[in-house]
Image (cartoon, rainbow, N blue to C red; front, side, top):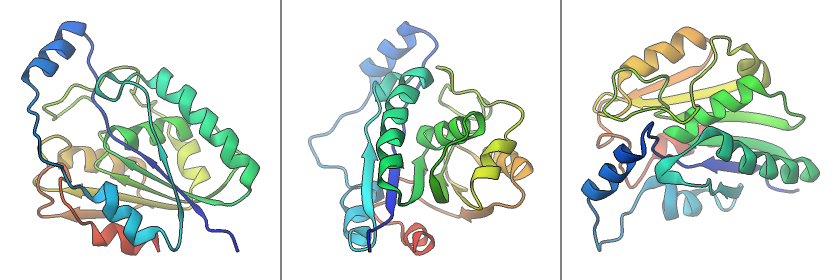
Length: 202
């Protein structure tokens, strides 16, 4: 029996003005140390025996544009459609809102199993990062929850980028979804392990 696909969409940043993007690059902290995160080797090790992990590499991660991400994503969907397997989607931060926007605007002919959204912003409110680049959601998101029977959201009380304001907005739109709110995930889910997610994926 073939393994189901787990399709992971990473996060990113957006800017309205190029000068803001350049200023971000000038002030960005860098390190020579390897940063370990739950979405890296940890995810591979925990899931490799049960899923085929597909990491979608979106263009211009640090100056993201929805239209550009959509082009690449569509290519992956075309390949997945040929495989005829169950598919679970996992989106982190900007990758989360991307999935909500895409599946609320596009009906797909795929065997969609579940979707897991980790700290997805809802709009440009209550955040210290700008949300632009075409990622704004439509008011009507009904097509999204028509395509997924199992919807999981994950938020943290100590997240300084995607606050619980965003969780409340999604809960209004998707009252049938499952919401997990944590006390501490080192801010914007900057943790090495994420056992709660792994448990729900199984």
